[in-house]
Length: 257
Figure 1 (cartoon, rainbow, N blue to C red):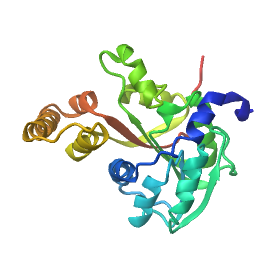
Figure 2: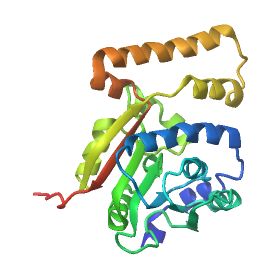
Figure 3: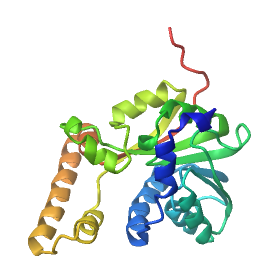
């Protein structure tokens, strides 16, 4: 059924997505995403972990290097992504497979933890995927970008250029998860680090480096951090660039009507 659900243009786009590969940029971005996973999982340990939508394996590589779990697995919709993951020869990575975006090739409750990092914003039928995750694992780390901000309706082309067809706030993600039978145990917000902004500005966008540009990037980050310190969770969720949750299957499904 899922093979019919996913659009042909989406499958083609992601099949080719990692053919033009920027290792430095992806590893830099993955460094912080992996740290968010480690941070939100503090106090928990997991033996068997699956990353769904593992991309090129950047996050997996960092987590394995940090001894996050003794057994890791990966599924990815993109053929070029799977090839990159295999080429990394990641220790403790027991399997990597192509999947259709919705149906996971595993038995019920096969994993202690599923990682879904910056995937949900790309998914055409997000609730179908979440139900499949719930079937296969006990715990889940889910991270999404906080794209839903003032003026979002004027930035549709910008988000589509990154493949983002869904936009979230922390509140809207919590609502989605709770109405699909997930119980949130821990969460965190994060802002784009100056190191990442500088790389994106000077390398990706090829803008000239300058003291003034560096000062502006550092100052904006410092101001946002100060506001979060002063005004707490409400400010952190408003200023965040990403939102990460650790959740588990609720004991009961949500009743509708």
